[in-house]
Length: 362
View (cartoon, rainbow, N blue to C red):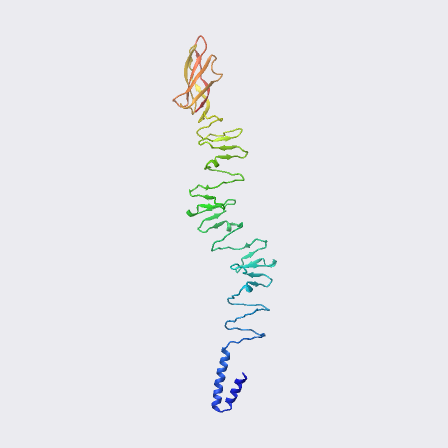
């Protein structure tokens, strides 16, 4: 700088031409100084505003004694020394693990308030609570228990392809799927499917610890492992033999009308009961000669057909000496034919209009 100054003085003492040349050199010198980069190796203190019109690069640590205001995009670059951003009250934002942003707060900063007032809080240790709607545009993976709480606005969970899980009715979970989502696969590969409209099919064992109520038809399918149904007090219903249902209980009581085609009582494999009818029928008076027999029809035995075997018992209204010694069903539905024997000697005896008890088995 001192040498340049001496050169300019020499030109100024040599006449008008020299003065002109010295002015031109001075202009070029000033322009060169302005256009070059300036490196300052010591501290800078300013009582006013520091304005940088273009890019400013700081290679060392930067400390702000007051508020730092950034009106544009602020990008923090660097290696391990810049993975932590420390906030006013000691909270930190760090990315020590590549691809992971971690928020570390203190007791007074367990709530993160977003632009429109939504909050993310961890007031309860280990629990993240969010207020407002949460939209996940990519795949969300839950490795622990996910609990969805709320009122009417959280009773519908829509899955990727439009399937829905709802609890619009209190205490009832409803799955609404499309054709491609009729199967629900559980943790160990068990499935719940509704491939057939109106039918739920389960693979794997199902354990019900409480009371199970079936309002419709319940069908149990499977092999030897599903032929045994154990009831509340240990009674069993099994079909180990194809076509045979076995009840394991001290007493078997049938209440109502049996809808099965055959009932077998005991352990024998001989007889089955497909129908059992009992009641009374009406006998129109007939005359039976002494020491002889006569046949008569007893009508009104509702349900009795020719496929039934019948047993008949007279009441005290049958005159003494007369005995019903045979009975059979007939081709006429509801009619039983009986044979009456007159053991009396002497005159004939009339039965009178009486009723007979009957039992019919098919």
